Length: 243
Image 1 (tube, rainbow, N blue to C red):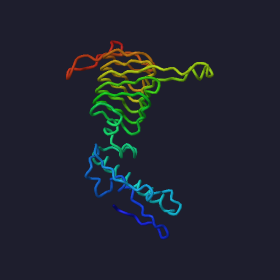
Image 2 (image 1 turned 90 degrees about the vertical axis):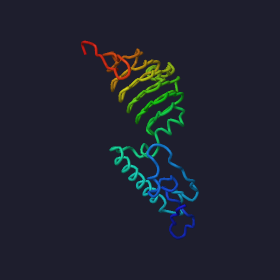
Image 3 (image 1 turned 135 degrees about the vertical axis):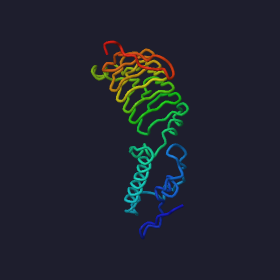
Image 4 (image 1 turned 30 degrees about the horizontal axis):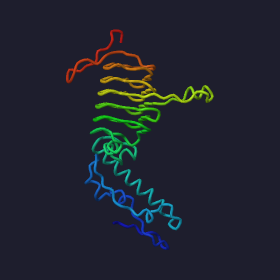
């Protein structure tokens, strides 16, 4: 294992961050961006940026993190023409979804937050900065869904607790999202709502009532403006006449 010698007077060897993560420039290219980065053992006592006997440890840690961040950002831009926050570049989205018990081929960005009882089906994409709250009741999302960037789905609410000065407890209600449903960026879904299958929720919508299957809804509060019709390659959106 690669070692970086400390300054005189400190006999403890430190291990470079890249080696601890298994992402040094020499071997990182062998790992695909999706899946399978190996993790090497690292002596946490030896690699201690808060070691008072080694005043340069924190500086080396920062330099190693910056080098790793630049490397991953370069790879991401070169392969996918995108630049992501450090953690979203470093950690595998499909691996995180598997560890959370989500269905096959689902993925979840590292910046997404999950609380409580959240279940997600197969082939579902959980975008960056999403909040999925299953702390108040069960939150279920079906297969082949897209939960776009910044979406918030809540199963508990505290608005009445606040305005009643604590006299009314927090509310709770299960939320379900059916199969094949798209929820646009920055939309908010409140407790107790059921969104059906094959629905489209437009960006920035506030969903405070149930959405039937194959509905297209937008707005705050969300209102129906059309329907999803057909199947397979013949699927299309039919808008209401006044839309």
